[in-house]
Length: 208
Image (cartoon, rainbow, N blue to C red):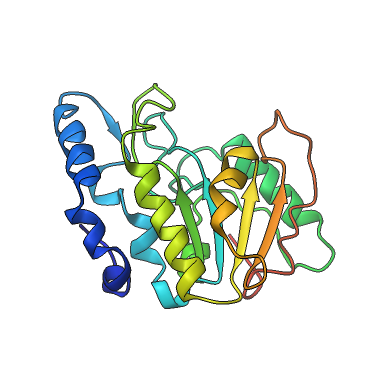
C-alpha cells in the first residue's frame, strides 16, 4: 500500500476492516474514470512522514481535482504546477511573520515540509477529476480519523493545525491537554486572512 513501515502497528488492521473493503470496491468500480492523485500517491502523506517523526499535523479536506495538481499531500502541488490560492495565502502568512526566515518560493511543492515532520493529511485521499467531494463518505474519512486518533493516543506534544470547520470537526478527538491545537479559518481566498501561527511550530526555518 506504499505506506511507511512505521505506520504498520497503528494502521495495518484498518485494511482488513469491512469499510476498507467497501471503499476499495468503490474505487475499483471507478477505474474507468480519472481519479486523483495517481494510485501510487494515495498514501503519500504516510510515505513522507514516519509515525515517530510527526511534529505537526495539517488537515485538508479533498485532493485537488484538476489535472496534474494532486500528489497526495494536503495543500501541496508538484513543482511545475501553479501555486493554489489557499497555499499562496499560507505562504503570505509565513512571509510576513517577523519570527520566521521565509521567502515565498516559486512553486507549491511541500514535500520538504512533509520530510521535516509535517503530516499533510487530507480527510479524503482520492477524488474524481473535476468533481470536488466526489469520494467523500465512502470510507476514507474513517481511515483518516483513525490516523488522527492513533497520533492523539500514542504521541505527545504534537501540533494540530485545524483550518476551517471541517478540519476542526475532524479534530474533536484530539486531547488538548497532551497536544497543541491551533484553530482558525481556512486559508481559502474566500476566508479572511488571519495569523496561522506557523512560526512557533515548524521544526526549523521552512524554505521552498
